[in-house]
Image (cartoon, rainbow, N blue to C red; front, top):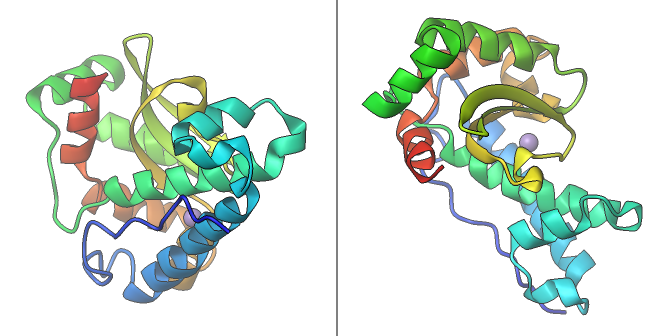
Length: 200
Ligand code: MN
């Protein structure tokens, strides 16, 4: 069986996000959950015309095909998790001047952005993701359910936070808002978001 997709290395050490996200959470979230999505996807695309496609191509190709829901779910989750790890940083980071200006224009400022992002991410019912995206030249906060991703619709993603329970349950149990306050306040990778904004 071919194995076209591999689990990308983490951009930081597995304990680098402590105390906001524990090494133990990363061991399970990256080492078990993310790895399983990669393995599942490889099994699903092996021997099909999707084996030679990029992850983005697969997600966009199968997004409206009910018969390929399993492919969409696993491909989406592989992409979303890799994007999530890159959306996190061990140290506090700042957006570029261009992105900071756009955030001020769109939300009123960083503090207002953080409040609105946490509110939206908290309100996502069940499993899913909260995103900062560029849509038609404007910044938007959106949430997606399960494996769905704005990338499937061709939107430019700047950063994301995973709000599946497996993202926070070991460290915060049911307290999703506490997880979000800590991550949004201290661990978002604004350098990564700014690089994505430049490309938008
Ligand atoms: Mn996850």
